[in-house]
Image (cartoon, rainbow, N blue to C red; front, side, top):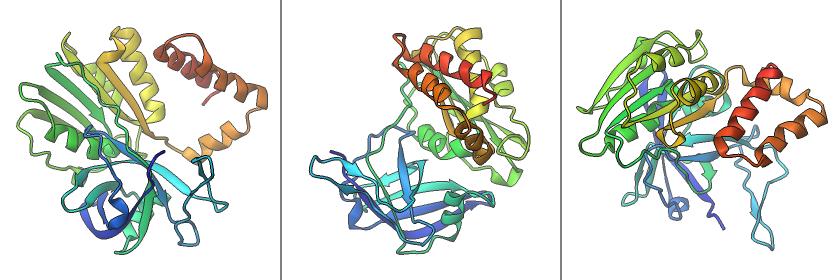
Length: 289
């Protein structure tokens, strides 16, 4: 059974015009156990439209049951965890829209959020001496922590899309070369992430971590898997958000039951996970999603 952690805002810090750090503390974090993985994340439960944090409850079988109130839940990276101080940081992209970013920009001490156990997806092979990171602003918190935890002897190169030059952050790493791609992606212009990925040299001992807008990453994954022919253990491609999400969800919700069932059935196919993803992405392409 997963613990339910409740974090209270202790302070906020504006890192750049496009990112704010929310530091959480309080006794409700005593059950939080970090994975130690640099890109670990939790599904954050935010206060509802009424300003109240509506929490799930445990039934007699030990299963968490959702409250009747509509809860807003989104995945976010744990940027820092300090067990001794009982604190953790979550960095939010703020861009004038989106419920989570709006909450973070206005958060005040004492406000609460909740989440269950974290998980991470970064898993480079032990012999990966070069690591490539390609992301947009949403991946900066994870990349910052990954840069801090790079193993000795590993060299890294990062290409990062940001909306404005003022959104740059210093990674304080002498083992990671950073290229900033300004004015692209991030909901302000067409993304250049896959273009940047194609321009990076991928050696046999390389691990590639790509994170950002889900639609753009579909093409990035195809490049790594099919054009470059990388083994799945050599890359991780992680969708952090979706451009025009409400519009996309509206089109998805309009699908008939048979189509939705066919999409869901892909994940039960007798093939490996990467082939399932190929099938799923192809079906989404056919549906214009």
